[in-house]
Length: 83
Image (cartoon, rainbow, N blue to C red):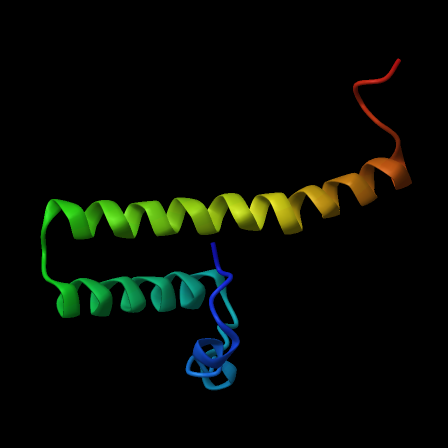
């Protein structure tokens, strides 16, 4: 999960690299993953670690952001599963 220590969070300044399009967002993800693999080497463990981190980030994004948004929209527009 993204809950790293506060002092390490400051090391990652994203203000200069905020993407404006989905393609740019994908590019930033790709470059970070590419650099991580280059620094740590190609191995099953590293590939598995990268996939695990991506999946964890995806699930945390879904849990914290998407579900909150969907619940808001459900309360505004009605639940499609209730008759």
